[in-house]
Length: 301
Image (cartoon, rainbow, N blue to C red):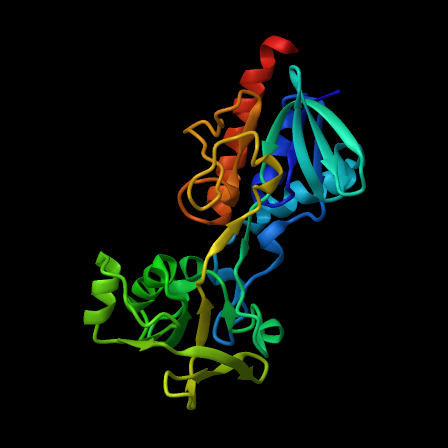
C-alpha cells in the first residue's frame, strides 16, 4: 500500500509528488503524460521566450527528477477512485488497481474547442485558450475572443485594457447583463459580433484570419494578431464524482489547505475551485496539497 497516490502529471501533480518524496512518503504518481499544460505555449512573431513567465524551470526540474525515479511513477490514465475501509483504490484504464492511504487529485481541466477547420493547425501559433496568461503580450495589437459566457467577457475585458482593438465573437445574440457584459458594450475599442459563428481559421506560420458566418448567413473575415478561444473549462474530476463535493462547474471544492470534504482526498490545480488557471498558482497549490496530505498521514506513519 502507498502512503499517497497523486493523480495527474501537470504542474500541481509534479510539485505535489516531489514534495511528498522529500517528506519520505511512499508516493506514486499516476498520469498519462508529464508536464500538463506546460507542454504547450503560445508562439508569437514579436515575443521571445524570456518575456513570458511560465514557471517552466520549476516544472521541468520536477519532471526531470521523476523521469529518473521510475519507481515513483506509473504512466497510464486513471479510470476511477473508490473507497475501501480506511484507504482508497485507484483503478487505471488498463485495469490495474493501486491502494493508498491518501489521494491528491491534480488532473487539470480541458479546454472546450471550436472544432473548426484550421483550429488544430494553428493551436498555440497565434491561437490559444488563455487570455489570462497572454493578454499582457498584446499591447496595441488587434485581438479576437471567441465565446459568449462570463469567461469570454472577462478575457475580452482584460485584453481591452492593453490591445488596440478587441473583437468579441458571440454565437448567442443576447449579451449578459453582468458588470463585464455592460462594460464590453460601452468599451470604445471592443466590437461585439452578436450571432456570429466561426467557420475557419487561416494563416501562414501563425493564425492571421478568422472566417465568420453572420446572422444573415454571409461569411466575412477578420484579421488579428492573436485569437483566444474562451468557451469554457471542463475539469477532469470524473474519477471522484461520487466521493467528493463539486461546484456547479464540476470542479472539486477544496478549502485553503486543499482538503476536500472527504478526509484523505486532497486536490490541487485547475481541477479545483481555486482562483486563476495559472502554472505558478498550480505549483503553489500542489505544494500545499502535499503538505496537507503529509499532516493527515503523519499519525499513521
